Length: 347
Ligand code: NAD
Ligand code: DAU
Image (tube, rainbow, N blue to C red):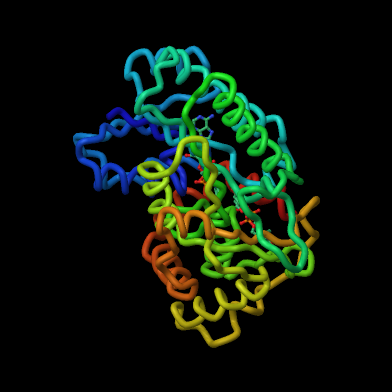
């Protein structure tokens, strides 16, 4: 089986690629990634010599190249993760998000459809999406698979749009698909622009921890390897044209999470208790900031037997250890363009 994984050099993608390459030696895994600032082949150094793994540096917005690749490799199944994924960047440059997340997804759908000429036996288009498409929750309630779409940021609007196109290709062209909508991931290899790795990096360097607004925004956190395991299950056992929500059963207000992170960092860095907390700085809120996300993951739990394996405190501790043991990785990804972005975002 030839499997195309897009965005495999990014955060979640690299964990999915590693799991598939190691667990399924009979599958040929093709990782297509154009290596934006968020893509990093260092994430997959351990797979360089694997015989069932090929890296392809191409861009999903380039329809001609994507069509040619499908002609050459006749990919049977796709796990599509490539995307622009940071909400704050989408506020600064929405068009980039439409190009990659919407047009890029359409290019893959068209190439997949053309390649198999409507003979879709044992074929699959698996689209990795986000809980942000559902918008924001109030104090109570959970997102289910039937919650109406109500995206509030250019990022979530682009992901909602790509979800709609995948479903439309299912209805119109009979294209076999599954979609999963997952909550906030954390863990090793996450680019330090997202809350947890950004704050770990800032604590290491004694820099302010910029908490947006009053800090009382809530997210539902899931360890990235648990997400990869859920993707493996849905890929093999998910029903055609179904959506599954994936979440951590693990809601945290940002400020409480940040305080826990500060406590763990003080211990690990051997600094006096309370030193990291002093770095907390409340800053201007994110425009259109969604108040609360929380996933009802009972469908994937009941139907496929998936549940998160790690408690948050344990996952956070493992994550901090990874960043402390991989300072060269951190330095390599935080120079150059990232510094420019950081200045613009937080000045
Ligand atoms: P990421 O930003 O870390 O990685 C994205 C990857 O896609 C990078 O390797 C980048 O180089 C690649 N890419 C971007 N544009 C491309 C293009 N035009 N052509 C080819 N490759 C391109 O993202 P992530 O956090 O790993 O998220 C992966 C997917 O999971 C995304 O679709 C995202 O919407 C979704 N998701 C993320 C989270 C989360 O918490 N991070 C939660 C739910 C869903
Ligand atoms: O819910 C899934 C989504 O989770 C994914 O689809 C996105 O790709 C991923 O980036 C993430 O989106 P968020 O916007 O929730 O993640 P982020 O880490 O950017 O922010 C988490 C929370 O922390 C959010 O309420 C904003 C806040 N925050 C973030 C940053 C970067 C701050 O207070 N300060 C910051 O500097």
